[in-house]
Length: 93
Image (tube, rainbow, N blue to C red; front, top):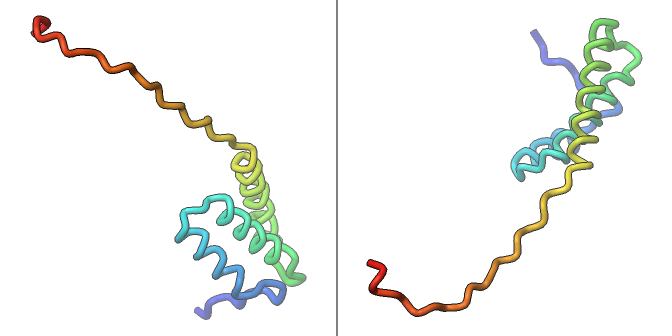
């Protein structure tokens, strides 16, 4: 079975961006590249109805994940507390 031909609206740069995002560990960029690829596939005029439904549901999931990742705010890093040096108490041993 021949592999499916990419849609005309989709170019190899999107595949490269997905691979690059994965290699960097950039989850947000990976999800955005995936969303772009899904949208390009949905826009194809000859898409089968079953594929359209599946891709539409996947698009909703990916869009929700992107929204979560974009709204994520990491906790600020804790400021180290400086302790005043104390003399060691040998009687405590």
